[in-house]
Length: 41
Image 1: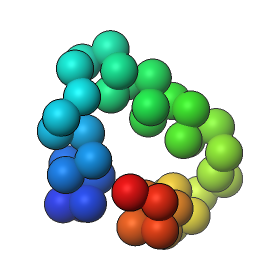
Image 2 (image 1 turned 90 degrees about the vertical axis):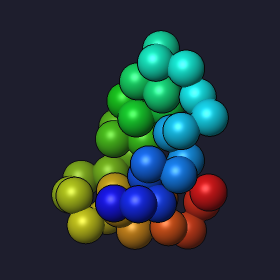
Image 3 (image 1 turned 135 degrees about the vertical axis):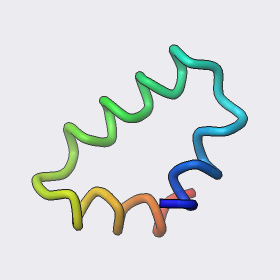
Image 4 (image 1 turned 180 degrees about the vertical axis):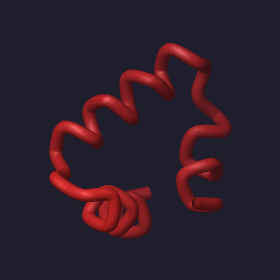
């Protein structure tokens, strides 16, 4: 979870929401989503 916070911290609210939505569309499960976060910072 801290990886996600670290990635989103420098972004403004809209940018962070768009990033999350785009990234969620690419994954099917929570595990897959969090794995992708740790691989692509």
